[in-house]
Image (cartoon, rainbow, N blue to C red; front, side, top):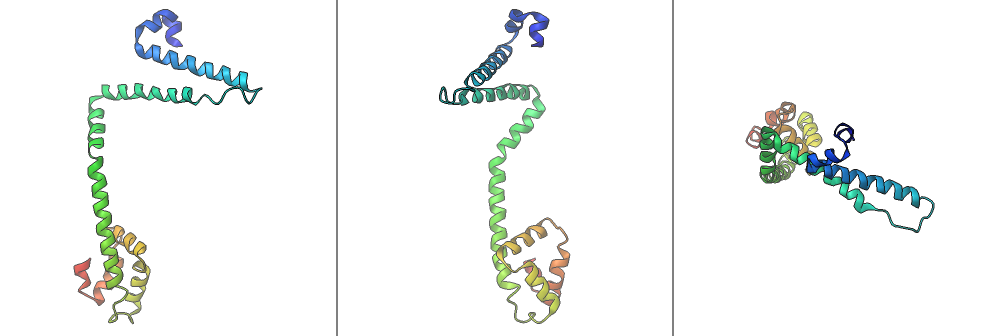
Length: 166
């Protein structure tokens, strides 16, 4: 609209294909509003014009064009998009390893008959390793080193062989 006021409606449309594209989208949007106002009284006239609404999404193509102009930003986005498959496989591999070690923890830690009568060991074992889900969350917490000492210290003091596990 500002270009049309500044350069005149005809000269504004001659400047760029993107300006023409925006003008077409605005005209389609205005047409949709007029059709909706005309159809507000009758409910059976035309179905919703969703195709016109989908065309508005084509404005995102303009955003992509602007991203390409910023070479550094484009290189970062391209690098992230190229590494998505690697990140997915890393996530899958880490999830599998955590799951296997969670199942191993459920078998090793709460079912230890030698340390079952120690209240500190028993409390940590039943709190943090009672199910596969809680053991997986505990191992994720240990992987990020989020106060994991309070979890493995009571266990390792009573059963030093668990240090090989942790």
